[in-house]
Image 1: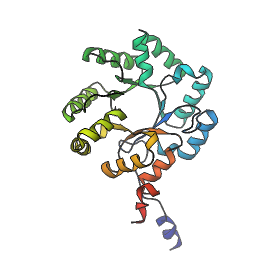
Image 2: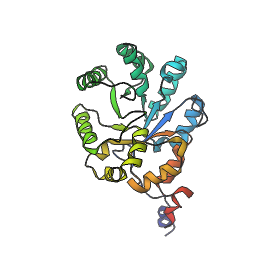
Image 3: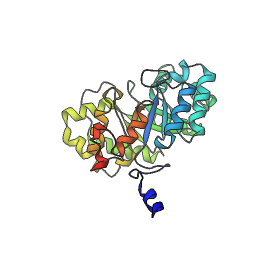
Image 4: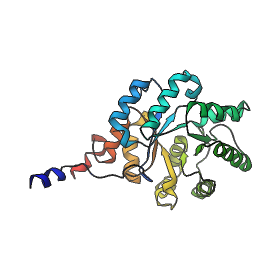
Length: 261
């Protein structure tokens, strides 16, 4: 009887790694007010939360900005813990800007990183260019994540266009498409019905929604309420990762401790 009571005392179940939904992607800013992610910080984060996040994104230009021996060790810590580490899309866009994409790929390979984000936040690629860059990265052994959207969008995206893009990416063996946070903000204001329809799309499991670290936990709780606890979320900071897992399970004031209902 005692054993049965102890087994019943567990948190609400959630999908376990390797996950196909309910993915969490942490953004590693480095030593930052959102959470210290030097080597010791990453070790602590992994000790606390390695089962609860799937990806770690090396912020913007940190793959070049942080001293190489340090960033290599940080990447190794993530990957040894079963967290897929990837470089941010701004690094790719800078490589395009400086005509040095192949040099970037060699640099990332030397850091031991196995995945990269291709984005068009500030640059615009022709469809053939996009396919060529994705193919080039894959030929170098990289897992590619595509980020959809602009940092400063001027109009809301349509579900039809996003659907077409997701299908195109899947055909190119790009499993996940991240939706830029600014695009989510834009469609929430101008077309809330389209945003509400997003989780009903058959391809939604391939989408990762960027949340706003500055609006934690309220925005994150709202996304969980609207899209369900198994929504894929990106831009989760080191200091927010464990608490987000709690929110997914109904723990916290922001979700009104729903596990008690």
